[in-house]
Length: 179
Image (tube, rainbow, N blue to C red; front, side, top):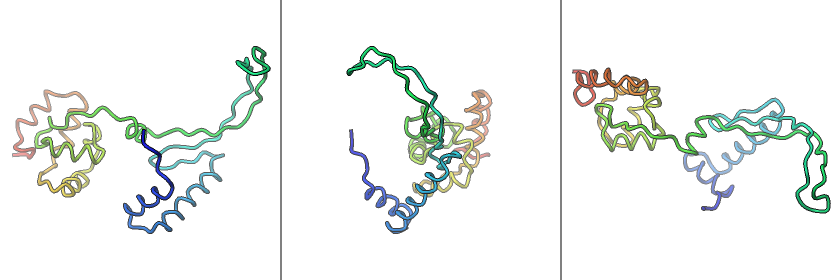
């Protein structure tokens, strides 16, 4: 298992990705943390990551398993606890989502499919929901030349399990383009 990132490594990484200085990144993260502390009692959402909530844990009876009170029942009083619930997108990114075979889309080959996987587009539904401009940007970043105009339509059919309709559509396309 790898070591967790240090605060310095996190600051360096974010600074490198955003073009901000480490000092600016530190200020943003510090302000985000202060805002979360202040707003947690109302529930606080960190976009793309999750929601922090303050919850009440009820009083309960517990049988002590060890120590001088082993075997005795004790009452644990009610108290407030913090909870964090990850967003679906975060769960999918962290735990992994079963990848769909994007190569069944006319015009997508193994290299383009890999570029989409790297960009976080793993399923037909995600491909169908991605704007064409974003698909073009991913292709440009990977230095691939292709026309993604029909890909969301094809992906939507695949996501809905309409494979016969997808095959009919693919038959009318050449390299993923309407002919």
